[in-house]
Structure formats: C-alpha cells, structure tokens
Image (cartoon, rainbow, N blue to C red; front, side):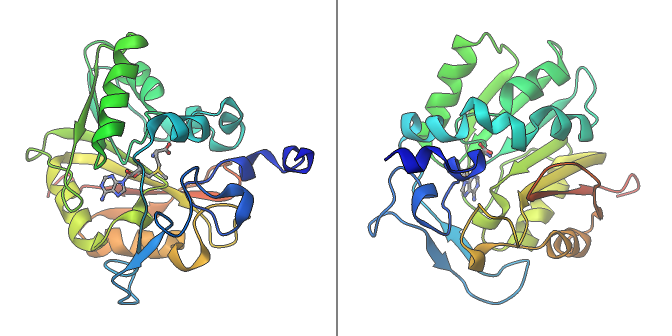
Length: 242
Ligand SMILES: C[S@@+](CC[C@H](N)C(=O)[O-])C[C@H]1O[C@@H](n2cnc3c(N)ncnc32)[C@H](O)[C@@H]1O
C-alpha cells in the first residue's frame, strides 16, 4: 500500500508499537507484547516481553538508515563521554545498531560488550562485528535479570529502548551499579509518554520515574538535555565514593 510510505519515518520503526503499521515484523497473537508483573511501580512494575528471535527481520527496522535522523546515535554516544581505552556495554543491544558508534568512541584499546537475552541476536551481532571489522566488540548472551558484569569492570552502560522490557528494574539497576567502576555511568534512552511511536502506552516509563528508580538504586541520577524527538536520556552515575 502506497499509503504506508507516507508515514513519518519514525513510525516505520518500533520494537512493538501501539498500533498497526509499526508492529514488529513477527507481530500477532502468538508473539505480540506480553505484560508481566503489574505492581504499579517504576522499579519492578509492568514490563513488556516480546519475541526478538528473527535478526534479519529486526535488522530491517533497527538498522534502517532512516533511524539515524531521529535516534541521533552520535549525539547519544557524545552524551556518554567515552574515552579511548574504556569499556562500554550495550544492554539489549538487538542487532547492534549502536555498536559501531561505541566501538569508535573507545578505540582499539577499548572494549564494547553487546549484550542481549536472545541468542540469535548475539550470533548476529558477533557476525556483524566480524564483517564490519569491529575488533573491539564482543556480543554475549545474558540472563533476563542480570547483565553479568564482573564487579567494577565497566565504564559506561547504554540501554536503548530496552529498559521497559526489564522486570524488577530497581534490583537490575543495582546489579549495573555494582558492575560499573566508581564514577562510571549508565544511560537509559527510551520513549517519552507522549511519543507518537514506541511501545504501547501501558509499558512506557517517564524519564522522571527512570531517574527515581536509579536514585533509589544508589546512583546519582538526572534527566539529560538532548535534542532527540520523542525520547529521553537519563544518566545514572555510580558515586566515586561508592
Ligand atoms: C526494542 S529492542 C532494542 C534493540 C537496541 N537497543 C536498539 O536500540 O536497536 C529490545 C532488545 O532488548 C532485548 N532484551 C529484552 N529484555 C532484555 C533483558 N532483560 N536483558 C537484556 N536484553 C533484553 C531484546 O532481546 C531486544 O534485542
């Protein structure tokens, strides 16, 4: 249908959107979004479960070149203030959209971990890293409730459009804090409550609720200024004295 081509570009991408055209490639009753744990709190409340087991199909959305215009990966990575030689982790890295950007920012002496719960995406990311010559990138499968960091081993953590998929976010945030070096930081990028695209409304989290979850988990947290349309960036820093 030609009409679909007239949609604003962001509507052509969504991990699972509220309405028809932006549904995931494998959408439908069997693998649409599922709600779990409706406790009504930002830290361990309702979260969305969704199948991400078709890398080629998801790559068409996640790695759509048109995404750069609204996702602004260079701006996001600039906010992370990475230095050469550092270790950065992307949790819920999907098909690895952010990996080339993170790889450049930490340089050949640095390390990038692409982490995901879906083994086919992990395989896809490792193949992508090999194909694109990203020698400092390694993709790994992680558990749904633990990013699997060694204590104080990571400088920066990025979580894009994935925080709302995580259950018991307060406990999860504490595990991230333990994995960060003191002074290291977590960056949560997700859709605003009033974004015209993104997850269904009941799964969205406000920037302030994300910030409050991070504060309660022992981070110094704030909502950052940025120019992303329809998304926010929340930074949580592990205190230096932690
Ligand atoms: C909407 S996609 C975002 C992918 C990527 N961050 C991007 O922006 O292109 C969400 C990703 O999070 C992963 N995911 C969901 N729950 C997760 C969890 N508890 N831990 C790690 N990854 C998770 C999914 O498998 C999927 O790849």
